[in-house]
Image 1 (cartoon, helix red, strand yellow):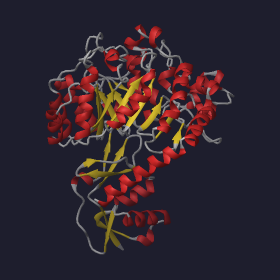
Image 2 (cartoon, one colour):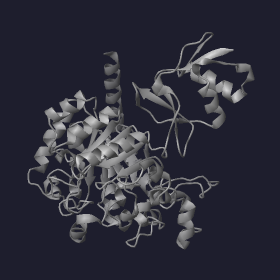
Image 3 (cartoon, helix red, strand yellow):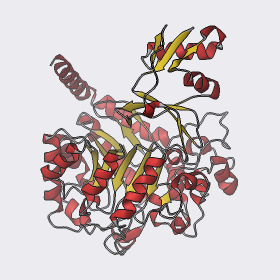
Image 4 (cartoon, one colour):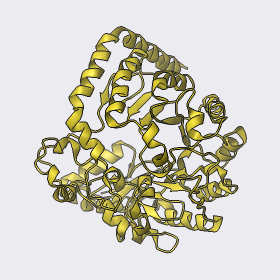
Length: 490
């Protein structure tokens, strides 16, 4: 007979859809993804409250092994005597919604730029922006659902005069801002100081659309100078940030130079994509948009340069290619590699939607930001008038997020028996959604990739480049290893 007690870094939590969970805390704030448990394991852990005597000999073998493992890892403390009750925040609490790891929240549709490719058509869409009282209501709903990390986006979120009031409310609810999407024009020392004073040190995702081309796409003559000033500031303060680049016919030739520049400014990751023909980009796409084969040719021609330069940052080229900085290990995102025995009736059409959600600038709960400009958006529930917890598992939102690959297959005869099905799995749900709101179609871009390029061609290009520049790559890897050793030595 022994007493077990949960370490103060942990808390018992449950959600409507996934009721048995253990979460790591940072202070009283959730820090990591939960450890989901089966019912027997969870009931056993509930006895680890510091006051209840646990008879190990009466436990089943799996539960005893669980206690031993968690004790060894420091999750549990074991004693022959009572250790006192758990802290109030550690006690079991069940939340009313589904489990969501992260919510991306558009706090405004307003923007101080005039981007030619804006998904939300921010310069012309009437600038939706909820008053502060509605934002505070949304924060209450987010907190009540057990969501402890958010990403803030817009429009341009920093244009709100009450931005810091929103941050203050999030901090009061112990909600961490993991990421802020911004054009960086309003980033300065004072703002970063204010955020840190409130216990927030988010990462930033910043758009940079090519050396010499950024200002044109953003519709502001001084945009590139403002951005580079902000990147320098983040680098000086050792704040992590990533960048996104919308590639088109005019800026494609700047790709190699852009990667080198961003790496020199401390950028950790660059994601490239061809803008979707949504929002304002519809007006420019005929003249500037790349077709899928043109985009592949650009990526194919650039990959040798990336490896020659020593993989200076992590890079994603649409779904064609992903590689971590200073590493030759890469993947092809479009290649899903579903196992032969997969049950497509249980496999979600979109895995990201299972743990992430988006709240638009009008307070609607939407599966992801890419649903913000499709005809379906009016069907999604408003959490200004509906309970967010209930809406997450009983609404049109839940209907969309629970869609399976099998439903997509049944809806598309072309997919049935397709040789690429197990690698494609339908692709991106939003990319396949039609103008009349049919969200059960397959992603035409992913389908095109597997039929016209395929993983083998991407790997042939990448592997040839790695072999060609092996000595340069080895020198870069050695340099990075020396940096790590020096840092560790300090």
